[in-house]
Image (cartoon, rainbow, N blue to C red):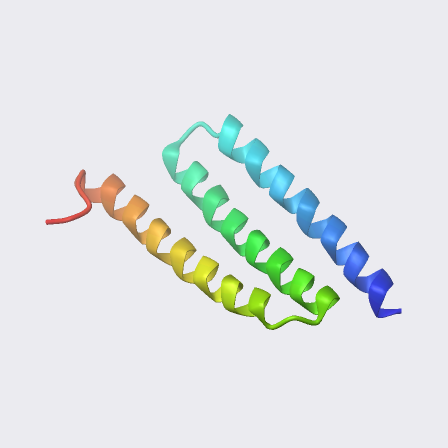
Length: 89
């Protein structure tokens, strides 16, 4: 039963990533693109965790932590660039 649940979750998160890509391409404002990119990081994180559950390996959980940190830092850097025009002061 868990295999059906993981396959269903894979499909749902893959569709969510495709919707995020569509929003990144068609968004009018840069803030919408940044939000779509941030939610795309979260969906990629969920896919990595699901893949780790499916294989029973802890390596993918560690990789998902790295992706989470990268997503947070990039979102903060984009927001700072929009507000101030530079990232490092």
